[in-house]
Image (cartoon, rainbow, N blue to C red; front, side, top):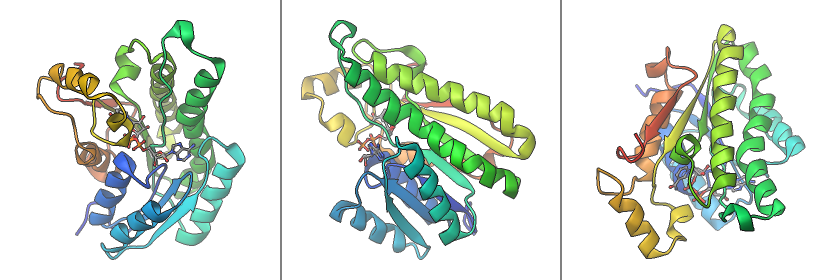
Length: 248
Ligand code: NAI
């Protein structure tokens, strides 16, 4: 018996990294998996094969989470293919860091659109589905810097704070329909996103973490499993920091 037997999960930006770890974790607990990414290349196909190995249905969709129409089409396609959608993880995200004085409008717009508007797009498309089903769990991938702020990341921090406001509002609006919405706020997680930071910057981050290590995508996937499953059936409108006590 898996914690997600009979459920279908839709995870955005899951060809690699944290999203992929969540997809694998959910499949290992019995869920069928639909995931999106900008392109489904060799890497994405490898992710499909790894999920398939758990013996559940999986389909990957090439789609830009920032695009309202594409997103609504993906949700319609997933519904047609899987029959129901019980879990949404708004995971797709990017960084375009820069100090405020040097930040371009393009940097701001790109990060807000991909990180925050994408979650609106998917939530907007999926809530009618979940309302008809009289239940569902939405998990937004925020960040500790969405709670605390971070020099050089005003665009990213604002987008991640926005995801918290979105989840808390959806939790209040949709709670009576049985829909829960929560956020995970990861700290410093080892993935392609952080691998591009210079080694000295990565070491500085780890020095600030009381547990003295970067988190793994699996650390995040374990909390996503909790929030997606009935283990958290009375948890909604919350933010769970998963950061080795870095920012608590
Ligand atoms: P990653 O860069 O390894 O993976 C992000 C995935 O999202 C990629 O597969 C990428 O192609 C996809 N993506 C980007 N733009 C997209 C779009 N417009 N439409 C669809 N897919 C798109 O990053 P990682 O580390 O796995 O991050 C996942 C989420 O966790 C992000 O939202 C990130 O902001 C968040 N996060 C990561 C932390 C870290 O330390 N790695 C810390 C806090 C939050």
